[in-house]
Image 1 (cartoon, one colour):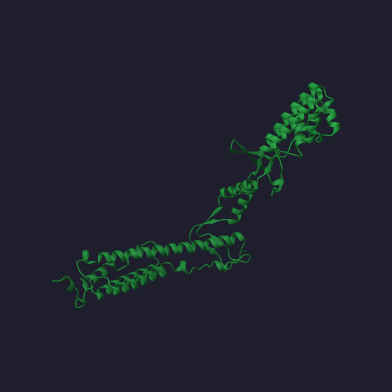
Image 2: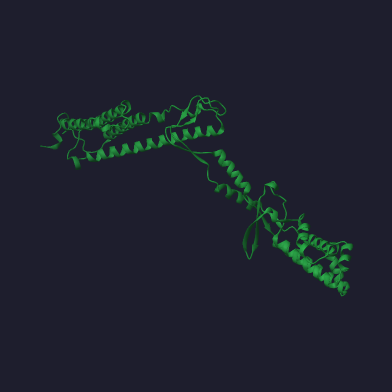
Length: 391
């Protein structure tokens, strides 16, 4: 007997030998109806939640208790932003040493030192004297200071100039800072980063603010440095004066590098997170909504929307797999028969009824997970019904 005539109710219909427009429409409608049943029945509370974020307004009392049914990871944006701002303030302010300024300052002092020692020895010819004054070095120190230096014994003058040159070199190598252009309150600066270019490479090091030298603090720095030297008070004063005169601010503020430091510090801050526990009130009825509470309400709503979207997508994908599997299993290759339009329609209708029955039982009966839903579904009856009616 031909397998196509086994059906008791649909044997007089012409079998569907290939998927045509009719089958596609029927399958599409069945899939759409099944999706609606699953989504609106199983995800009803998520699609139409009891709690609406728009009901909670900033600086107004909460209209009711808001209790989450799931654990939610909440990011405290306000505290996170405060931590980022603090990290940016703590980031080192960058200064860059200009080695060319250092070189010029040291050369200028060396020229002055050689001239003064030669003058003390009495072997400066008029041409060198004129060149010295043309370079502007003669006007750096007043006549009283120059006379005081020349009044020293030759050995004292040579020793004082050597010590001065050593201190000038140390100060310039450490960097004499200029705070011009700094966009931050000086009292907020805790550390500075000093960058310098050596042999084509930039080398950076950090220092506390109390270790840097400025134009104003330079005389005090020199005076403290010479405290342990075998110099008279007058010689210490002359040394401090010489260093202050020849030293130049060679360490300038670098706004680009400082901005990058602040950006890196902000990005390194981890968000402040908190778990909003399921079953615990996020907001209590009558509680005034602060920015923090408003943020928690928004996190709850966002999480609910995201979770609902994920569940709907996963439901649709699972349903699509079920339909595709059903079409494959009912194909002629496995089932050994071709189905009529009535048989296809009957199978899809039976699936829909079975699905609807399962949803209604799930929603209406208080199973609470104690009994599996499969015990109540007429699975065996459905299979027997298909056998009787189709074969």
